[in-house]
Amino acid sequence: MSEFKDKILMCPPDYFSVDYVINPWMAGHKEGLSLERARRQWDALRDAIAEFAEVVTMDAQPELPDMVFTANAGVVYGNKAIASHFMPHERRPEEQHFKTWFRENGFELLDLDDKIGFEGAGDCLHDRGGEWLWTGHGFRTEIVAHAEIQDFFGLDVVSIRLTDERFYHIDTCFCPLTDGFLMYHPPAFDFDSRVAIESRVPPHKRIVVDTLDAGDFACNAVNIGDQVFLNKASEPLKASLMNAGFTVHEIEVSEFLKAGGSCKCLTLKLHEPVRTA
Image (cartoon, rainbow, N blue to C red; front, side):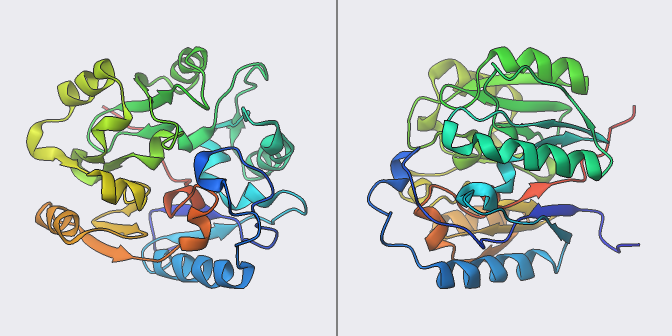
């Protein structure tokens, strides 16, 4: 039995490439990616996370370059999972592989209508202080999915709307942290969403990320206990995280930024225990 309470799903970058453009970060990178460097960076992230959590891997598949981004496989709660239905057609062939993995690993899977766009833990994040799900819409997940998520998991859903196409999933600009802290980039959200965030997260728990750090995907971080793994953070941001009790690990994943993803995109947290009163 694993000594760790957290379990993280990753998929090696065996077929990773930038073959199409489905977000602004991908533009201009079709020829400029090093698979060898990407593999070294993925290995370094996996090894760093494995010091604090059990890492399990699924097989990569030919001609599916974005399967490496397992955050978009789906979202889990207890033994239930909701697999993604991708808005970009280029990623839809991944869906059958993710659904098969969930079923073969004992998850009860929601049969979400395939007309509804939903992109997993890219747009659906458990709060780490309260019993609700922060769930995005605006680019890749449709708001009609939110009621389905709430009914299946039996958790409140807080809908937050993205307005900047660079931040096409909420996990690119929003990271709930242990003990109810939140690291986020407010300009990525509309006014009503910022109000919803501020009404649920008190000021002393909010860690605001500026434009420079947001552009380095600092919010796309993996949080395990008091450990935070991210691509890059400024000294002020690292100080804010450390003052909140977190240890920061900078793991360069520059090759994956060329596809619009970073540390969090490369992982899916599988251990989300059902909370009891």
